[in-house]
Length: 395
Image (cartoon, rainbow, N blue to C red; front, side, top):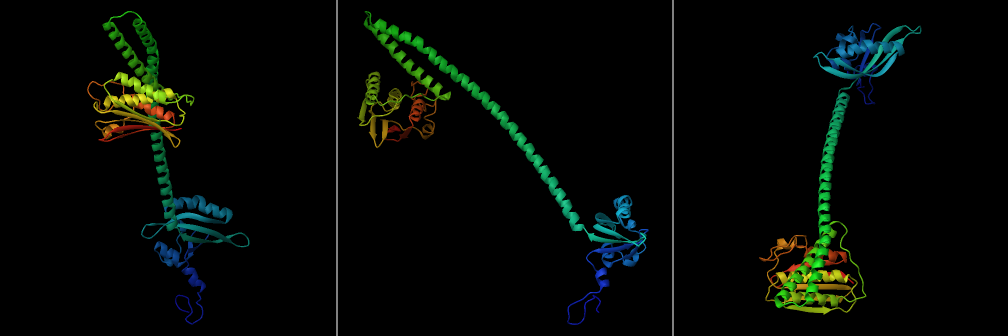
């Protein structure tokens, strides 16, 4: 038999029990009752840097670190005496160089027929990789817990910031609601004195007046009409911003064309020097709120007369076809700048007005709201040739 215990012939290799003992992948020790080593295999000796002969006669206690010695005296030896064995006890051996070698130890006592302790067999397994894995696992768990705590802290911070922002938003909404409620109440309360002024002017017109007085009464009536329009716009704006939206009362009992022609007539009287061209082709009934559509047409036409080229006509037209009602107003003049087009339907956004022109900038916003209330759209296209507003809604 060769040195490694394998047959020199051609048959399957075999190993002696001695070779298996000495070169096993684990350490074997045999201890006398007093804890001294009387047999140890080569594997264990190599692990800690000694020869088997150097280890014989030494106590296992002397090969342990301080913590292991304490554990040996308080747990290891008593447990063996009590039950005669133990499994997978973690110990740290001290090598010749002073390094610590983690091992897992199984032990069994051997006793004679009368129960006397003869010796103890120990099997040791190198636990370096396992200890490293356990340490890395603990570190990974600690890192995960730290990351979780950090995430929870960040979430708490974000949640607190969100709550603070929500509180600010609620406060701003409350302030805005209060402001808009005030505007609504103010607009409502202005109607009564304005109606009284208008009624008084009508009474004056029924009495003998000279030409100058008639002119003044006419100017006052024109001002009250304009103020009534401003109040209507303010009321509609406040109603829309308070969340109720514009109210519409649809009906098809009355045609829409007379309303559109009345709008044209009123604005023609207000601006007698301007040319308004009409093109109405309405062959089907329109299910809409006639008053609101008239308001939309008046806003668009008034806007075109105000901002369009004064020497060019303003066009207004309406058609019904393919299940749609379409109303357009077009005027010549300078095109609307793109930056103004982006915000043209926002309230208080009048763009660049000519000197002397006044208004709240609510007309186009309210017209847009009227279009939405009818399930339609209001769009604008502005070029060098013309600026055209188009309102479309399903019949």
